[in-house]
Image (tube, rainbow, N blue to C red):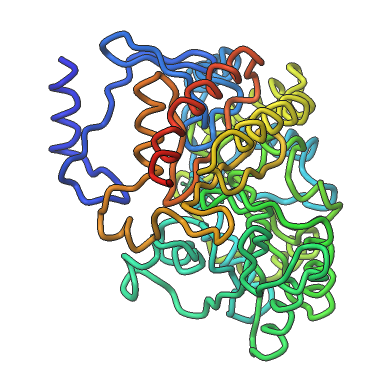
Length: 442
Ligand code: PMP
């Protein structure tokens, strides 16, 4: 049966972000807490919460119950009506969103949330340019892929993109795009974005992931975000924070922007908002933006927006994050995870950098620590060459631990309920698998 399911899936459904040949999706039959099982009964430790989204752990009972109860009460009502859960979800969001963000658009993915945010910024400012950063991921549809800096945008250029997005440097202290050193740079990368605004016309917004996620868990220096917010504000340009991955306790706060005391004009989020048990994307906007649309047309909407079945699990998930104290737990367990990963770096010459915050970490592999030369490049991935990082992740999987891998780094982001024993289980698999990369040095 397993082979049938895998084969039927590959034959009749698209495997995404890849050529189809060779796609053999693992047939999963059960998931619980930090683990899931395949059809042969093999157990896996989910060391990246799927796509950094199962923050509460798999099959959280309160979330599942909320979906079932809502389905029985009212599974759907169209966007121009309301129902109890729409008002309840908005109120629940207010409990945890940065103060000042108090009007929401509920979509069905992170991509759609960013798509809406771009439109809202354009409608509000009457300007159309969006400044994004080269190392970034914001989604897969025309607007959000246009704002995406990573290699995935290459595959849709120029047909699948909107015009008006320009790219600037990211805050990457391991590989500074401006060849600066973190202690003396004075966040030149933030100033560069202001320089872009000053030399472009019609800039509506700067769109950033507070901590770049898929592309390497890049934590900016402490002064970066306050500086960027100040520079954007002075120029009347909106700051959009894409917290699709960094929200919901992942970094040890409800939202990563809280680490720097910065409230963006627009915050987008998804994933952990429902523990990924239902597809929900959220756009949270400032009161100034909300008020603008009192007399201006809000030119956006979907049949499935504010869908009751997506809002009920969001309310339940927020209650669960609180009940289980998971925001604080993420900060605490994250420190432990960081220490354990750094200890591995002392042992494995193939580790170039270990960085992260809360339970959100990356391990970047290099051929040579001094030159920081990577084993592989995005071009290698595009050319479908075998990547060292995939060999390491593959070995971990053989050992029953799954992680996300991307060109040169692994993203390590277990559910926020992870125990120290589970951290050790994941670290042991990584420790063993890294010998594959170490052997390629010498
Ligand atoms: N923004 C960020 C920062 C993301 O990490 C992702 C997905 N990984 C998205 C947007 C897109 O979200 P979705 O896949 O739900 O459309």
